[in-house]
Length: 362
Image (cartoon, rainbow, N blue to C red):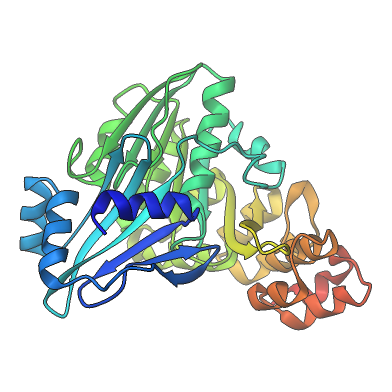
């Protein structure tokens, strides 16, 4: 199969990902599960041809020098795809993620309604966290879409690569791609604060200086969105604090305590009907107790706070229990994703997720 046929197969099967590598059958991921396509394995020579079709000269040069390159492509009639080209066992390989034509709404993603309230916050730091493939990019895109349809904002995004292409509606949006429009996340973030933004989206907080600059931007009245590769609110705070240099830890803790609006952590669950996936979401929001726990560097205390479910907050296991009781996911799926499978099992025997706060805290 040539590249066009492979991408058509992704769309036809409603797959999220396509995996290509030498001496392996092209494989798609559908609802979280891998399925080989009905086609022969690609030879190393065929992978070289596919790499030439996917990459431009600059990307091929980067791949040759660094052995990996990330970018996005658009194919007329099919949509956009995020591409990760790399080498394995001396040969070229690729992982492609399909990006929907239309930017999903918060409602279409089946995110909790409180996400709209968080998106409408005028200033501060909002973090969306989760493992690779947990839907972070889609959630952020839906929040930017919500702002774009409701407010006349100047929005600047810094992405690696650009996935969802945002069209100006009420807002004026500038999207910058690292390596093409911008040197790095850090350099672009420093530049963005001089470009009259109301909202800044920086694709990932990868290092202490980018985190410190994001906090400074939030501290000076901007709304900053970003992602962290962590699996819960408490783990996110632990990861951020670990990035702080000792000589600046107290100052940065203060900035984080004062400016953190919310942490939205995601895991994707398979639907009970076997078609599609939906997000299970943990939400931490700003409150006087949140600020106190951050200032005292006590992230372990956050779980009990979140479990009280005030102001839209919820733990993963509470949301999983809710989804299970609504028959949107199965007990087996809830247990598979749960922080505490035992607590979710208790809810299946008649206890409501909110009544399990003590059992759900870990």
